Amino acid sequence: MHLAIYETTDARAVVHTHSVFGTVVATTMTELPPVHYNTLLLGGVVRVAPYATYGTPELAANVRAALEGRRAALMANHGGVSIGATLEEAFEATRVLEWLCEVYVRASGVGKPAVLTDEQLTAVVERALNPPEFPRA
Ligand SMILES: [Zn+2]
Image (cartoon, rainbow, N blue to C red; front, side, top):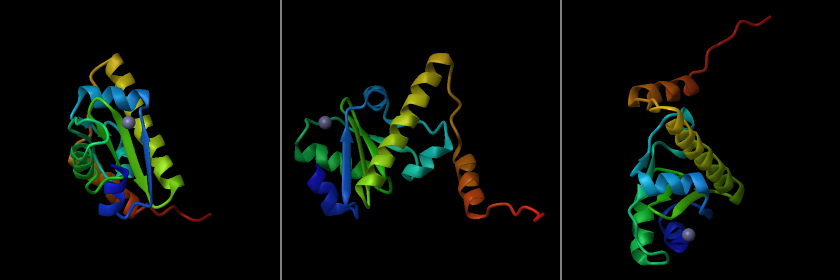
């Protein structure tokens, strides 16, 4: 799987984990609902790659597809995988992924989490690209 990611993306580092909250989401959902705009740090809504036995070409192919345009993906009933130009970047994507999964899982225990719409996520991108100007003192 790692080799397939290196062959098909510009990633220079791959981090794979069996972290608790990532695995909880990967065991119950087909994608991580975007309840926080930090999902944009990973390139958008995080997909869950369909299950396949670890170490198989099938799992590698499923993960490659799930990573399309993303810095992280989850693997059904398995865990997470994150990529980056450096090990530090890949690790940071791993940290963000686990945080997003923990927020979603904990929020689900309190009530039904509100999911951000495409329009709301687009507004975040526009805001980041066009930050407000503040008056100078
Ligand atoms: Zn594994």
